[in-house]
View 1 (cartoon, rainbow, N blue to C red):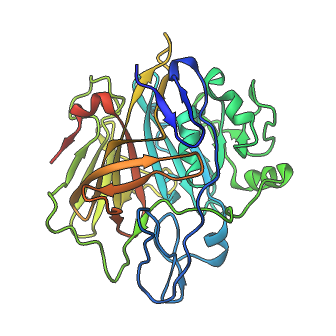
View 2: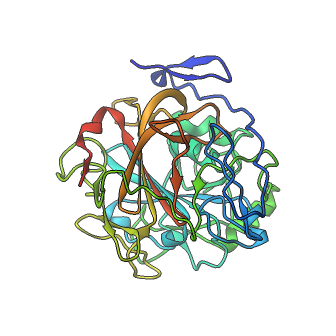
Length: 374
């Protein structure tokens, strides 16, 4: 069995032993520039976030208000079972993570920069520890309803996570205002998040609402005027993270997840369950400027098929970034909880994304052969 090793703590842990990874501080935020040029710190996936007098989002590389530029994002656990679809408000998430869970389906986590004016968000499902570790890359507040307590309970109740959870067993500080059940769906697919209620609970718990002073951006973005140029890279216009079949055990096959590139607008359009993946509130298909396949070692934890994925390490696991109809292959690494995973190409340079929303598929490395790219 493969071990996961956190270099900062010096602690090797077996996932089957149910031991969490230790948290650590991150490096300093890169300095801003008004020159209009992207500034990259050598060896990192960071850039200046101020261009031509505009403040650019850490999550999308697009202009944002001063308030949003400094605000902590909100990570939200979305139901992705067919009975819980379509999801409401998911189109407003700047970043989506799609990761396998027990039963070999996928669950989603949205990273929201601006959620305050949404009617509702959901339906909401429960937490798994690997989602929490991904949320920590963005210094995000973390909202969920339920959890796999033996594997994530201690982490959620620790001071390492600003947790917004429903009143369910195992949570020390349940959030009384954030969640409600709708009458148009059957439980457990009818839990929604109230943006107004979230604001009340953030205030109740006195959670920090602005980014850490040492916050480090995860992505390197090009600019609208100078998009990333990958003309020499392979074409990639049809992406199947779990393959084209429906029976593989990789977690993506049952949901039939796929992306189709549209050269006219430069977006990858999302499909699942044999149909367009839409937002309940807008009734429009989800579409993303960038798609990432991040390969992680995975393990089955118990007879209930609970899973674990390696979210840290420097073992050179593969990453594939898709943008502008092209594929850039490289590796990813991550040294600690508050340090985001960095993506570098085969020459060791940061992979540059185009400005816009991003969908990240966590690929179970042991099933990596199922991925189809055309």
